[in-house]
Image (tube, rainbow, N blue to C red):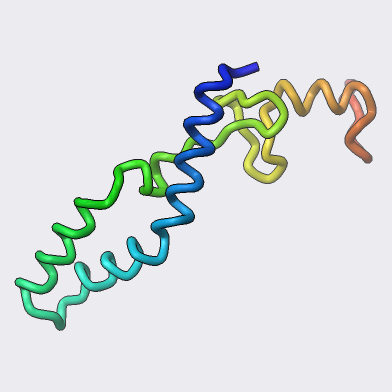
Amino acid sequence: MAKKSAINRNDHRKALVKKFAAKRNRLKAIATDENLPLEERFAARLKLAELPRNSAQNRVRNRCEVTGRPRAFYRKLRMSRIALRDLASTGMIPGMTKASW
């Protein structure tokens, strides 16, 4: 199990990303639009830099929903390999069986 503080910090980042997503996307569109004047694009970049750093999507860490583990994360299942193996061993995941050869 991961530290509660790390999980809570990541949840706070997810909330900030959701809160500032529209504003961030609008400013990025202005900053990358080649048809706008340079001063307006530069002003958009400055406003983008004023937003909280934790409101950027790439600062959110994928974590296991069961244990909070940050590594060996399967996106499709939203859990780590260890939690997946434990749930599969107890028969909690339908159709998943232990491989044998």
